[in-house]
Image (cartoon, rainbow, N blue to C red; front, top):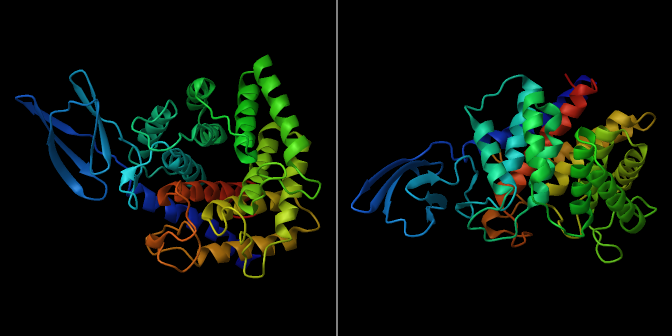
Length: 381
């Protein structure tokens, strides 16, 4: 079991390695502004390019320089992207996506696991950026991922202080949501509603829970345990795993055995597909992407804490999966978005909405949460 515990500890090493890589990409330092004859001189520290200076007349409300946005409100100039994560592949901050929210969540799980913050204000700044983005990110070039961001806020409440939780619940209650009819998005909205119901019981949340839950169980969840993306139209191993993971977390916060049953059946479905080298995400939409693998680690870790007679089998599959993911980790700590040995810059297997920092933040978040789940169950030290 000592060797197995060491293997399981690699989950923490993977998650924290990604987290430290992301820390170097966070916009942390505020700006210095000088104005002369209607021209603003802006100085700031860029996470990639270092100390920068540029001049602008700020005729537009929003200005961008080297992928970083600045906001003018009357005579006040602010660093709009302060706290956000700069993506080195697209050379911009992707506020309409969910890298910063999941980075914030990963920081909180790291702090909970280790008892140390090591963030120098990263938590506060990343939360402030996330809350701004939850109201719509200015200059967005893609649809805002409200559900991912608000789900992350809701899912991380368990490791926050009571005062932090109360403050954040107000934000979650008033946050915007999407309305996509895909299983994992619906499951995230179900989790958000269950969270609000848990802390602030109301008829509205009760009705939402009933409607979403009935729709998912009736139309999206197959007898085999597979959760389809879209009923009879789309089935993806990656998104099946993520949906199952959300149902596992739904059980954790509600104690509803129906959620546990869905998650365990979903886990059993994917366990039967894990190859000897640890791979399972080998076909359908999202194939080979770290999104599915990191969610898969959580699902198997959670299953391990709920399993009796099949414990050794689940543990072996989980260790195989960890070894598989670990073999792709780069020297700087990050994972390729798609787990293959091709040049990342070629973006083989990427879609137009994919970004390196977004999926790495997601992976760090779920890996660290996986380790916390195992630690709380006594399976790791």
